[in-house]
Length: 295
Image (cartoon, rainbow, N blue to C red):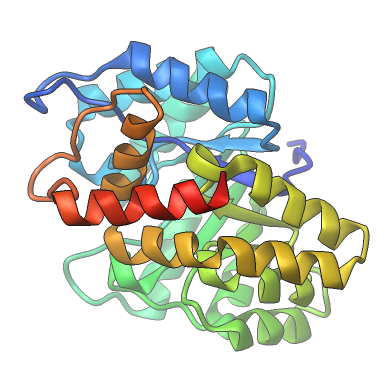
């Protein structure tokens, strides 16, 4: 198993729907992927929170997965989120993504019932043993209901051979520092919390998994470049310039804010799938004002 060099700005894709929300719009998905890649992002991550993977039927998920990988066409690495409520379904998705040519799969341990540490470990072991791809362990208790401590993350990292990277989205920078200390700097980690981007890079994050490049890729990439150049003054200026929009995206909900923002640029991606609602007129105006201020 070879591990691709996953670094930099990792762009989340949307899943566009028809106006009534019933049908996938793969043409719009292709356009959105092309925009992200043409902007210079370093990897593409379909079917995560922004891509509304949790709200798709199995057949829809399969179509989006296959189309996304084929459309990216190895121009950049693809990191497919395969999370599901049951281990069996997550295994099925992981195998499907591997068969279609994904480079990495991302796994969030979602469950209705609170999982024990041994159950979480067993979940990752089952997925890891079913595929030959690298796995990005994803910790986001706000969406999964499961919070993995740095100690548990390191235990999984050491026990499951193809868990080779970690995405941290708790918004607690101390988690990243502790993971670095406990793992003696050997655990590649990625930031998943937009307002924490600057601190995460300073803490040693290899990349930033974010939906923001759909709207402000140039600023996201410039921040990463400044960090790589060790230009802290420039990095701070770039980060604080985009922070109001990053906060808005997080608080307004990723599918709703990104789809509204794309619509303002001429790319019609439909509304989020219910029960998630589209932004109201007031929020759309606020979003447009933030985008105008950055143009």
